[in-house]
Image 1 (cartoon, helix red, strand yellow):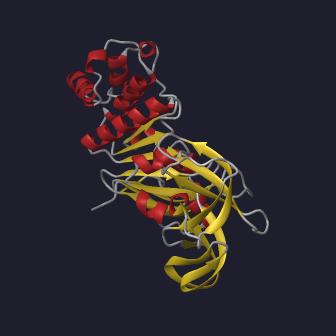
Image 2 (cartoon, rainbow, N blue to C red):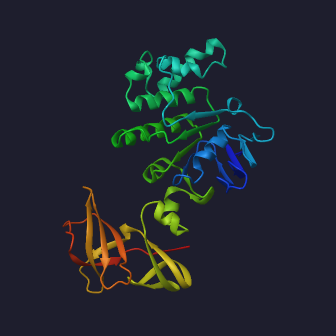
Image 3 (tube, rainbow, N blue to C red):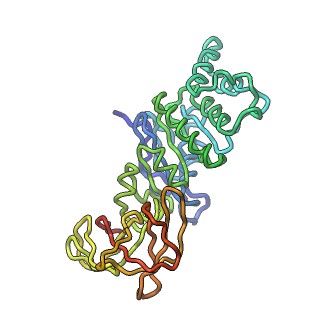
Length: 344
């Protein structure tokens, strides 16, 4: 089956002699897939989205949507069959909800426009609000209007640029779940751009973690989180404790003692231990630490601990959902509960 989106060796520079913002990027998205481009500011994820949309011209490589080449010759945004949902929604303030959705359907025969608009409003659950103006809607409702306007023309691909960042925490969660459900029901292929790790993990079928214009690692959220290939991935997607050590097949000697490894290695290594894979213990064989900071979050607590006698002030982070909640200054012991991952 032809992928909905294919990027091949894509390159974009904003000035001659400067490093590329997008650097030899290749990726694809299958029909109905929810793909997330995740990364820090300046990693090239928004530029990639703008290249796909046709808002920027690439300096190299190719873009295909539904098997159609869009770069040579260059196809303008309005002829790409792509829907866009922006961070600020970009609703027309002088048009009501129905008018905003109808605006994107001017290419259809007049008799088809109103039924299509109302069908799409029903999909996003806004039929009863069709006569309201944008300023009369909540942030989450405005987001769904923007989504309906983008979905109404039935694009081959929907592009979402930080669409939830203007919402408060609770509304962000509920709106994200609603948008994901709507996209599932419509069968739309979508690309989400975000710097929010939790959002990427919750929304995506597959994510691409970008760094310096390149894809550092891609896979399902579970794969990338559980098997980070580099220290950057381990620390950006969630938090991680990075420890130097010496490996001998499936064991590594570290400041936490001899740890089991998830894969065989030999010689000097850097290993990743997730905070939830460290636990407090009463076992005398555990590593002695001192709690130097605590963040209580209701369902669990995050502790920063200092290794007793560690050179250079080595600190570790622990997520713990047990009780009692421990106090700063407590001297305790910790142990590793899962095999560590070797990273580069």
